[in-house]
Length: 459
Image 1 (cartoon, rainbow, N blue to C red):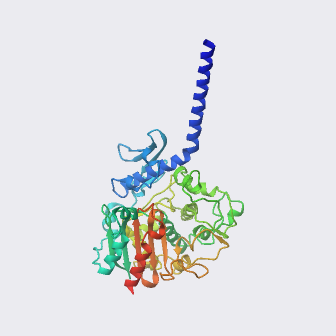
Image 2 (cartoon, rainbow, N blue to C red):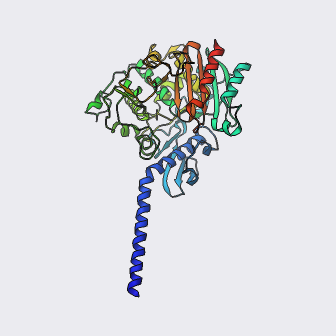
Image 3 (cartoon, rainbow, N blue to C red):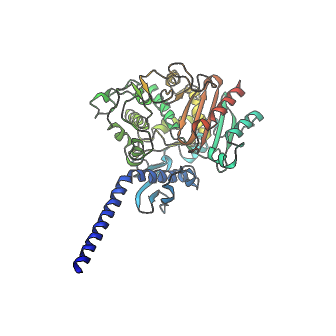
């Protein structure tokens, strides 16, 4: 009997060991995905509260079966936010660093001091002198324009569909004048919103600033000292045009390059630079957030600057009083994703592009910069619709139009969850649309309809 009991105990202990091993193994396998969820939630909570001044960060979490199991807590001094799964697993912390917003993983070096030119006094006074839209009164809108905005906000939809459409802010400029503006409940003209990948288009403008100053050239190669193979031929222009050929997967899923970069790598550019080449540079167009973050690390090195680079080169000169560009743990601006600004400031960026870099009586970009940056170049293979140098364009290299109902010279910035910034030079139109639309297809955002209506109204 004793022998039988010992055998049963051994079997049970063995089963328990197997179960524990399976649980630990399952956790280790799933940990990258869990870290994606906790990292996203921690950074989101930190930034929504610290930058946007909102108290409801959960409303910016996309539908995900992991969400009910997330536990988020603030540090007692509000200096950080930590999110875990069930309070114990896959913890991630985002640190708030004042003018630089939030950084995930560890507090970045050299980013705790306030930036001269971005403090509250500057935002209230000097920024308004450089940015005519910052303190402009709300526009008086025509019936036609009011109706176009109503449709863009889904006023004709049932409540559930209107909520899913998720439009939070729209600003329209025509011939440099503020002609339309509207916000969803809980949002105002002073509420910064995250542009996600619209940041990539602003990284193009940042590059142009340094090209004009002679610090960077589009043909610059040998961008990383460790690149001793064909990656050494990758150019600045190819990083902007997504034709570097570096291995990449933009899918937000377990173990992909994009989720690892954003949520597990303190030095995002070093991670991207360490990836192998899949294609010869310049031959294959593959959308890559990694390319843009690598680009900004190159810009930072060539300019001899730190996380203040986009502030000194763009945010302060344009008077973007609300803008915050968050860095990674090394202090490099996350140029792929993390620029926050109000819809008015996003529209200001569009107007700056429309004016070919002329601002406040100065030429801040090379005069041909926008023409070159918004021209799609032929490429042997492409996974994308026409993409130029950081901007999506209506006219492809073969002359075909993505949106035949819009002028051929239309170009736009596009970001996750429905962020859009359209520029139509021939009509003098700029449309900024910010929102939270994770369950809405791009074709159903109603932004193209809005742009078309604004173009027609401008004629």
